[in-house]
Image 1 (tube, rainbow, N blue to C red):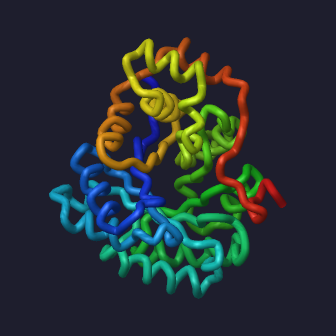
Image 2 (tube, helix red, strand yellow):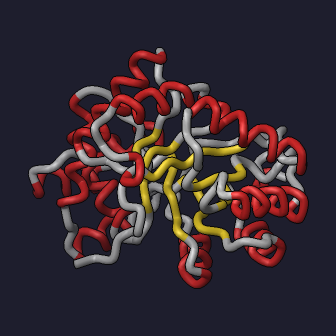
Length: 266
């Protein structure tokens, strides 16, 4: 069996149209079997995630909650105060994984991760990580942080495989969490992915998520309705080495999430 991420398939919470839809979708995800919830300050649904956790029958200790600090809240004092505010909105005592959302604006490796280390020491946070860190920024953070980095969340899909970052994280014992795993819907246009899905009696998202899980990486797709369960079924789909090679050979390349302040744009 292929190696998989230790935190498996996650559930993304960005972009829900309403709080009620966010609560409903998170509760459905937990009922289906997801145990990793991904949120962030800028998604504005932290309270909804907390409400869903409070209402579900799934014990809190079985749920892995990850959130992210906005890039404008990365000074020492802001890290401490904003994390406490996040905990209040979630209605939780502890965050399982706290990320730097973007290494930009107020980010400073020593100051930011120093404060995050204090949160780990106090028990408010269990693990820390980065999002959208390049290889160089990741190595700088590893050398600077007083606590180990647990994960690097990056855009990853068949059109942006991020081989160098994947190898660096693997060598450093850092989990790779894949945001935007369906490339904003572009995966549906791929003949290779559609063909494999047809051959396996699966959906295109299931094929992509299974490919990511086996790299290994932890994809965090957002979904609603029936797609929540359909995506989770990817955990039972194991691609053959030949199928994985066909996906690896896709030549189209593009990035979906990009900003002027992104580290690869500076």
